[in-house]
Length: 313
Image (cartoon, helix red, strand yellow):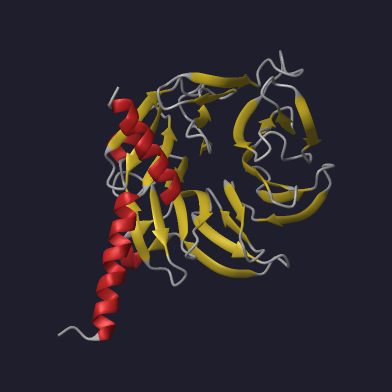
């Protein structure tokens, strides 16, 4: 007979395997791939759509979001954000190249977010601002970004407290702005930083981009957790780290861009630095998978149900 400990371990492994098998991955890449796709945990493509890609061949799409209604918010190119339904109808778009005073100006969009109130937050590099626009493209809120971070903004998110957490690749700093554009916190990481998220604990988890690391810091800027360069036990080399995400169980999802075909583009790691899931779909996404969203159970179920309904038409 199994001992109780063995039975618990078996159930845990079985449950973990089932959860990973059920989860879906929403991702977008360019670098010649120019695709937005939904895959299962093993990499099978369930839905995909081509994008125009960036204006140059050396950069990739940097943000993506599954919305509560099941639609996808993604880059079509460096300035155009598109909301598309799973039956591939464009239901909303916004072009920062021409909207709200930007015509004729140099502008790139690397981050956007549909907010709970229905507005869309857009971080506009070049002109150096964050705006929130309604469905008609009207600006409802706006802040200026600090000098030095205006040209190279990467991941940006509006926090539950109403502030904005913004990564600037150059000069390599994560900055929290309040609703008036005042800096209330920052962390100079001194790399071409890509992503950051505010954890339930109040700490900030930072994907350092070119620093090949993920680091957790307290509000007092003390480092309390870090992975860097490689995870030898899992034989994973870290490269351009992107999109750090905290799961409900405390595990962390990390994007691992530019790491080559032998390394996963996404992986899940525990707090004791054990890798429990890897996603390596180099053939589909190539070496430029910077933005992804690992869907939770509810989101995955919504997408599967919607795709099943569409296939039955």
